[in-house]
Every structure is written in C-alpha cells, then in structure tokens.
Amino acid sequence: MKKLNTLLLVALISTILMSCGSSVESQEKGWTSNLKSVETYKAKYPSFKTFLQADVDAGTTVKTAADGLSDEKAKIKKMKEANSKISSGILKNIKDLESKISSTKTKETSLKNAKVAADQKTYADQAITDTKTALANADKAFSATYSSKNEAIEAIKKQITKLEDANKEIDRIIAKTTDANKKVEEDNKKVEDNQIKEEEAKKPIKCEYCGSMNEPTLTKCGSCGAPVEKK
Image 1 (cartoon, rainbow, N blue to C red):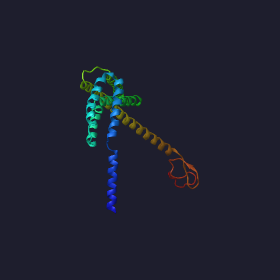
Image 2: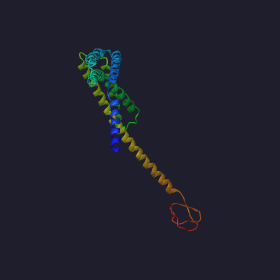
Image 3: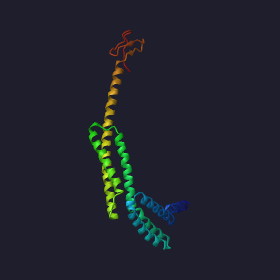
Image 4: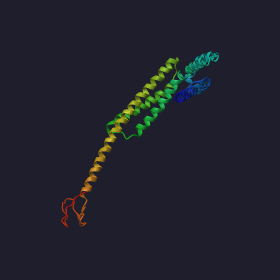
C-alpha cells in the first residue's frame, strides 16, 4: 500500500509539472504577446522600428517552420526559438533600459529625500547632478539614429552601465548616511539615558519605615534613623 501511494504521488507530481510546462497553446499566446509588444514599441520609439521588425521577420521564419511540424515536442521547441528571436532581441534591451531608468529615478528621489550626512553632502550633490545627466543621456538613446541593430544594442547597454554606476554611487551615499544617522541616534539615546539616570539620582527617597522623604545622598532616614536605600 505504501509503495502504491508513492507511485500515485509521483504520477500526480509528474502530471502537475507537465501541466505547468510549455505547450503549443502557451507558445502561441507568447507569440501574440510578443507581436503586440513590438507594435507598441515601434510606435513609442520609431528609431528602433526597423530593428524591431527585423527580429519579427527572423522570428516569423522560424515560426513558419514550427507551424509545419507535426511532432508536438519539436513544434514547441521551434516555437520557443521563434519567440526568443523577438523577446531576446532589441525588444529586451529596450525594456531593460526602461526598467533601469525607472529604478534610477526612484533612487534619485530617495537620495533627494534622505537626510544626508554632513561629510557626504558634496558627494550627494554631485551624484544627483551625474544621475540627471545619465537619465538625460538614456532618454536620448531612445531617439538617436543608429546604422545597425548591433550599434543600437551597444548604445543601450552603454546607457544601462552609466545608470548602474549612478545607482551604485547613490547606494554608497545612502549607506554612509544611514550609518551616520544611526550613530547620531545611538549617541542621542545615550545622552537621553544618562539624563534620565541623573534625574532619577536626584529624586528624594521615601523611608520604608516612617514614610519620610530624604535627600538622595543620605544613608539613614533623617526622621527615624532607619537605613535608607535607593531601589
């Protein structure tokens, strides 16, 4: 019975894995989605229209070959290749640059809103200036003219690297600022704790025997002479 249950479990897992895997239908949906994305980015960035279409043409050639296959596994493999011609081409690079621009703007805002440590102020001002320049150049990359797809891809990758450098500098400054602010908070907490202790030390002490209040420096009650201890 235990062996049977194990076999049933294995069969169930295999079924789930197969159902979650790739299929002709999922590849067809991916193809439709890729074509839709290409059209969107053609309209958004006309400078890349020719290169985007070239990837579609390359993918279509493979897709046509896939459509002529009867073996499902071979068909799926060929369709994956067709989709990859589009999704892994210039389209991916454009999306990567868009994503990097977005994350860089978020980091820039974080730096602007940060309570920058005094010794990092000059670096922060320069980082903001450099980040603005990097973002402006990245935007220009979308409208520049390129003689080939490879040239366009290299230009995009260059801008991504510039933005990554800007991000690293912002991260460094924020880390330094965080450490500095934490140190200030810790020092302030120590001062506050010491002040509380000093205030506690100045408070009169109530005698446990007669209830009289005594100065904190006394060791015996001024009224009944009983030992006075601070708790």
